[in-house]
Length: 273
Image (cartoon, rainbow, N blue to C red):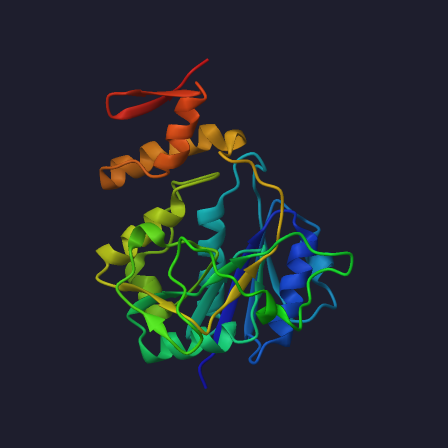
């Protein structure tokens, strides 16, 4: 039987992590391996103790002002494949696993291991006093409109690499080896996802979407545009441009420009003030 791992990286968000752990245990199929990479967060092992899906916690030293997201994902995926997994799922700490997520990804990757698979993600409203209904998540299904969202039982292939995101995805060991993993030169917020999408295509792999692997993103406050990450966005954006010849996150950069925070200087964006 195909062995499936799930990898999540975390700094804080402990309630979200506990809820994710519970949904993985409730699924049609539980993961064989659950790896949680704690980025500068020594409380994670205690948080997960005695929960649903049994977790392997890996500690990674980290500056909380610039979390090493790419490096953490690489460490988690490498640990899951080293543990014997044939398929590994990357699941953001904010994401609850739909009941068919693990089984859906396992079927898709096993059937076609030369694709990197993503599933629809629903962004949830704030929960009520009793929290989210973890046993009835499908009742909240309303996938993000900016990404493909095939129905359960359907798939879409030929995905746009610019639409890849690491909230929820899965791939085979051979696909992981061909991509080379995430580029660890990216640190802090932004661009490492889009870079990975490009690496997938460069490796001769396809991006695809599987409707059975549905996830539900738990609500948390956000800023739009994310001004607190402005320096990371500029740094990572320049790195991406050096790699691929264009700037990512253009919508945010243009909004920063409208607010007088950055300005375009030739092919570069620079911070003002």
